[in-house]
Length: 316
Length: 274
Image: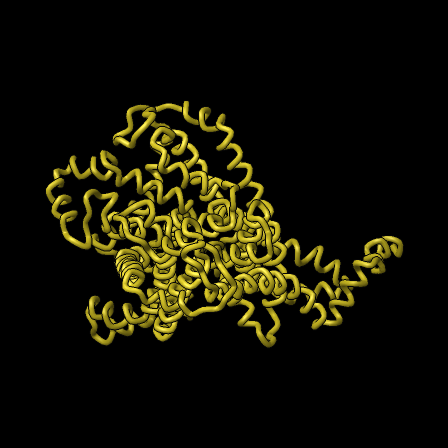
């Protein structure tokens, strides 16, 4: 009896591992510090170090004739951001980011609303996975799929021809600012690809916001005599704004920094991302590229300060 | 008061159509990739497909450039995931319970690499590597990927920590286990599936990343960079289609796995965005 009891008691802890873990349990501050040091070192040295280097190099001088960079500090790169040509690039990217955010909110809302209010159990799980799968599916392959869809003689064309909608498509493509010579070289095509790729990022935060909405509020609204659409406009919609704002952070900032989609689909004309890429790569002007990365950072900071007021951060 | 959704009436046809139509919109392009991978046509994208063949799979998998890209991407993803697992778990263990000065700042710092556009992270890393005289290559790709994968692991592990009652740990200590035994027999088994889920998602994210990689890859070519390079080559279309389908599978299957490993929690893996 005594022997079996003895066998079950844990062996006295005396290995170095045991002594170390006991020491850590007794000294929580030491424990915390040891936990934090590796991630802090990595992010401090690798990530913030890199960001600061980038920022610093934005003030370096690029010599147009010798095509070399000298570590002579200048404000020329920042000033160059305000040239009309660069202004166009910024405006083009910004308007696309806003258009994509608005459209994805419109498209995402019914999906999120249906998910949150009319599905439960297995159907809800199905919807959840059905939104997560395309969200996580390879970005470059999704973009490639759209080049297949929009290509001349491709899938979209086939459907348009089968449905006899060719004149409609022709008309849409002839609208300036929306169209282009073909679907795959039109603003509309590029917009559709962006909308497609970032849509799941909008659905999930809206769904989460609607999910948190207490049913008692809706019942109260109905009890107080509101018609369903009044409840929708005056109760549901305002309470889902934080979710929409949270989702728009993704759609806005992801569109703003992209350079692969604009390169593959749509009319010529740089986006902010393409400008950074070309300045760094083909031109070799790292200082200008570095200065240009400030544009999305500043735009996103402004955007975040706006949506923060809408409660976006509580819905993330 | 029940919060039964069926008590709130039925969805209108318009809403149903919009919701299911949205799902079709989300999945149709993915379906296209799966269809075209088996297309007999050797150039061009005509629709409907001409015929069914498995031939291009053997052609693609015999190409040395494809195999090299697959190997590189897999190696990078494995190593980046390993680093992310360690750093993400440490950060989660440090942040989940205790309040201390700078806690908010640290969680913001972890999110920053995926919150800032990829071009910023990519260019910043390139600028730093160049300044330090590090030649871009596999090592620099891994450093970049690990940096933005940490938050994926962190999110999964901290969600699990919050679900795990701290009294379990206290009970273990009260019953005479030391710190190491508590870690080995209580904490680790509880974290297991969250670590696996986070690791799978980090792997998928790394395997697919292209924007940061463009800047940090140097002359190396990961699978997404190989794909991007292929898009301007009309003769290679069938091989591209096959590889595209494989990449699609590698990035989609982990989310299914992660979902089943972490369901039931208040926050399911992957919902925090990539």
